[in-house]
Image (tube, rainbow, N blue to C red; front, side, top):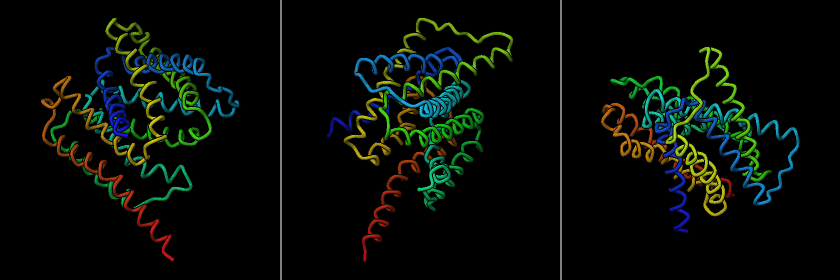
Length: 300
């Protein structure tokens, strides 16, 4: 069990390291994401063949998985765009609003879910924290807003994805979603080329190639596979609590790699601390509320 907790936090660190790789790779975000999802798709196809995963799905399911992959492509494109025009720390804080998005989007998209007052309260706290960040001497407001939008798209993707995970192997789900993400990024590159009159740079440097392979293999395929495997032994609460630490790990890594702590003012860290505290406290409030509800239902 202790080894599972270590592995879990290693996976979360890898997710936080994704933004670091986005900063290290010189390609524009749509091109970067294209290489990431195409590379991950190739690796997943090989894994499916080697491990003999059943890969028969209906046309209807293929369309749904691929369509959800379009959302994945949009999420990652916005994610790396936020890193590109702002920095890793700002992107991580924007992504921390996933809890807020989940509180509002899940009841809208899933009939069985209901709005809860504590979710709304935490959402208000997060909005206030973002206002604190933006109200200071903050030059990365556009990057922050893009990261917040990326978190919203990621939440929508995850909600839809939860419907597939119970019916199909995770490698198969991921493969078809990588296909959808690749299609989205290819269309984005085509639109950019049309508006500019020429293609963006598609040739990665030697260093870019190494970082892209690490991004596709370790931070995408490996991290995703380990996450699914840990779900078999650890509770969802434990995994989500660790996942909420991704912004913390990301900001620490950004400070180590790029000294970003020297570029951001006190208002950023005050707002960030409020957001991170809300994110970490939220699962405990939700679990306590669930226990109270369960006790009331059992009480005759």
